[in-house]
Length: 125
Image 1: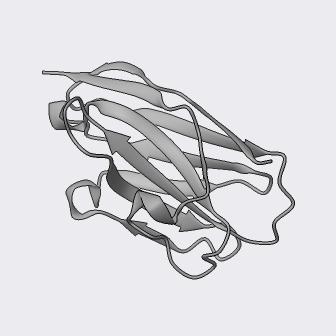
Image 2: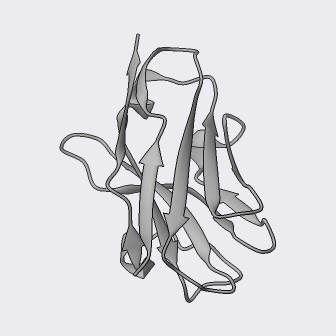
């Protein structure tokens, strides 16, 4: 059973930065896609971006392109570097793993097999 643990959330002023981490354990998959999602109060869960574990291929939603960067280390941790944060980035951020996608990072939550518990990001104006 794969377990995902997010960390790094917090309160930051607009224009600031945060780095979220997603540590995976318990799985022995040769490759997989990791997606970052966020959910603001009263809104649906939204795809932020994703990365393919082996190739490092990344994809981002338009609203974060140029501000957010997803990376991974050589073990099982994926990072979401968030710069130039805006109040509208305020949400609970989740990472998720799709073990069946090795070439793309799906933008729909239903594609993902495992989820973390989320970490809250609040951006003040």
